[in-house]
Image 1 (cartoon, rainbow, N blue to C red):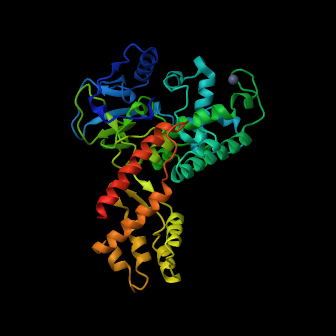
Image 2 (cartoon, rainbow, N blue to C red):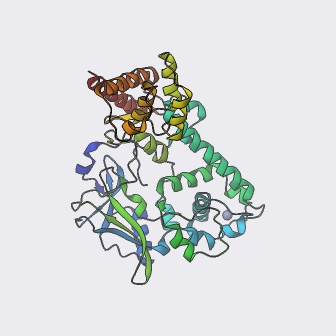
Image 3 (tube, rainbow, N blue to C red):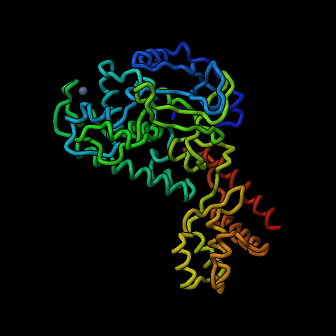
Length: 419
Ligand SMILES: [Zn+2]
């Protein structure tokens, strides 16, 4: 969602920011939304905050369970809007919702003043957020393995989407400017739309949306995403807690966001995009938090197996089958809270070849002191090998510096707990 800075500082709650009341794009956006039925009962406004960039505050304070914002369904770009749009005439086949939303944004931006969504489109950044997967694959070489894997997957997903979109666009003129459609929709503009959707879309209940949709929908997958003007200006904090729902109010369908914690008036209001580590935040949204309590270092099963070989240990067929059956090769990570549940469980199986039933210890997390010590030593060795100091400059410099500092903190934590 809305942000301009990659790094967030922990002082953000104290950041008073400067008013954006004179910003013509914001004035136009609010006027347009008002005309379309937004009442802004919670008196939300935008400010430029020093540590987070553009964000939302209010002239009123909020208690837990207060509604933060209520947006009329007609102001959201959903599959309902897509199915009634001109995209219907441009495409030979159905596409995924994210692809269609991206095309919609590109086309509405292309139409400029002729677009009925002009004021929303003008509120979007022209520049892409700094997500790592828009960089070249050569640049990926600087990233740690776990981040690189996510970045590559995202890059390939974008390329696959563009390929299927490109093949679906009809060879015909744009009704707006008479240019051929393949000039209106090119790889760069599609990437912009795709990233906007990736960073700003909200989840909506697909059953409610489907019940409103036309039978011949353009959308090939679940209609579970929407773009929502103004709502996409809220910044993320892991301390925030909100509930979002599509619901009927006085006979009208609205999207309501309720805060589950309080906010003082004029203080920046945050929402949570989820309990994400910095890898996820960086890859999905292009920013990270220096003090992210959900941060962790992911470890692959392959790394664990390499370390087992390095120690000239072995696992037998029965151990391997158990590890696979219980999916103990997934969700392996270490953080400032220690080893993840699965990593401890996996190592318990690895270190106890002859135990008849591993489950009774694993699922009660009953490990002896010497077990815990062995696990920590194993992970320390693994991390010291794996996390050799990475570059802290170049295109991902800020992220890598922060990542390295986190690795050092985790190593210190493990060393202390293995004494
Ligand atoms: Zn045109």
